[in-house]
Amino acid sequence: MISARERWLNHAILVVFAVIALFPMIGVVATALSLPDADPGVFADAWREGHFALYLRNSLIVSTVTVVAGTLLSITAGYALGALRFRGSGPLFLLFLAGLTIPTEAVVVPLYFDLRSAGLDNTYAGVILPQTAQSVAFGAFWMRAYFRGVPRSLLEAARMDGASSWTTLWRVLVPMGRPAILTMVVLTSMWTWNEFLLPLVILNADDGVRTAPLGLSFFQGGHQTDYALLMAGALIIAAPIVAVYLFLQRHFIAGMLSGAIKE
Amino acid sequence: MSLRTPRARPPHARPPGEPRTIGWLYVLPALLVYAVFLLWPLVRGVWFSLYDWDGVSAGTWAGLSNYAETLTDPSLRAAFGHALILAVFYAIVPCLIAFVLVAIISRTRVRGLAVFRTVLFLPQVVAMVAVAVAWQWVYSADGPVNTVLRGLHRLGLPDWSRGWLGDFTFALPAVGLIGTWVEIGLAMVLFLAGVQKIPRELFEAARIDGAGPVREFLAVTLPALRRELAVALTLTTIAALRNFDLVYITTKGGPGDSTKVPAYEVYNRAFNTGEVGLACAIGVTLAVLVFAVTAAVGRLAEGRPGEAP
Image (cartoon, rainbow over all chains, first blue to last red; front, side, top):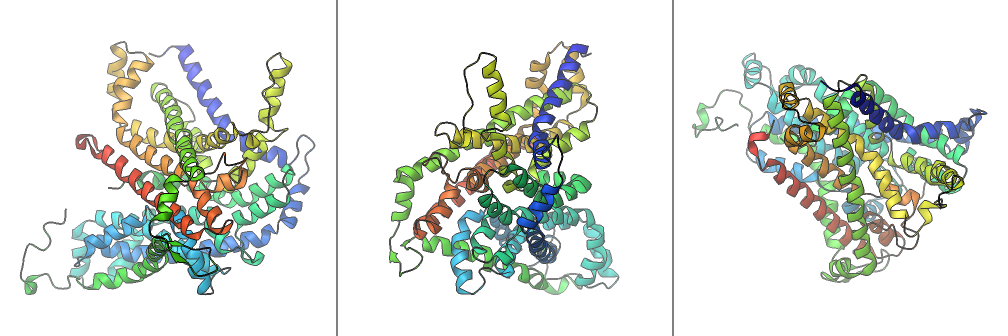
């Protein structure tokens, strides 16, 4: 049906774009190792000079707490909005939905001043709490969609068996909804790990609490043109999420696609 | 729809154990965190935006003057203009490229499609800060772009090499191209999902009718992808409007004002020049724009209900 020439041309175009997509990353690795005379020592240098052990640990703490708290809150909120019936659930859902469109840029300045008054600037809590709120805005929307998809007969059967709403949620619906929950966890982990503006503003003075992307930006400020060292740093902070992506990419892609399509 | 739920049955007739107010108990913790750390800051942002405040001394009531300044100040207007130009690079160019790629894929049975998809989507998951650092090297004085251009120069072409990110004319497009590179994968993966829902017979029929690649794309592929296109445009346009990390790392708005964007100005005005009220007004304006884009494109996508999957 399709000529051999067109077939060949099509594959060539795809390969070119794949190379373009990978090019900066291949370049990153090549530069970091200063190929052709490879020197893995640059990673050790970057690791030490950039305090990346500390920054990765901070990011791990911030992301873990944010994602765990965000997930628990999203599951309960999504359950109520999607499966339970109560007065005001409609407007409440719209309220959460509105949160999906609030950009960090609109809240970061007031957050800074109010968190500072509360003594929460330069603390983990100062970046965890706002990011949990952002995760909940997405998570409540996401989990509600899952709970609405659960057959009502299942809920009624559980109730007939005498299960309370709490038992039904944790014993029946959450185990069944593992794929939906995993997708949410993967997305909120990525957003939290990669977030830059909020930590930049809230963690402005204390080196000890800086997250990985923030650490990289300070590292960059100190080594403007030492590209081998900078690239090594960039690889170090990107690696954890890229690793998760390679294992769970279906969840990344499914989430990015359907999360955007609002019903 | 849950219309069959209440149907005006007297309260005592509802099924035993039907949860009612208990719903509120489940929502309350999430609502609390959400209200205190996202909604309230937004309200405070609107409130701050009505004051002239340097962040230190007492503020003075300013009414809507900060919004007037957002709309009239030449450098801020330029910043919104830059965001518009970036939207072309972030949204329109990636969608066009993704259309070409998807048209190719739908025509040819591509081997290794999964690998290709994984690779193209990868830029979406890497922290923007890391992306920015990598591209700084790509554009650097002795980086690959300039090396290639100098190679072309030796072949007799004019010398096009320059410090791309420090150039008044080229810094903004250079930043924009990074956005293009990031967003191609998103658009492509979206379109690919849409294309796979098109019945193969439609393509076969088009080919039997002798349609070439372009006709086939216009007649079969494009109409089926309306919804995916709307989603891709929404997400990428919002990414362009909210572009902060990239500008902060690569150019800090420079040289001069040439790559200043609204998101960067929120940070800059609040923490460098001490115009907190103005910074909040820019932030609120951005939020309104993001909301408007979401609503507008969403409506566009819903315009043809018959086509929703």
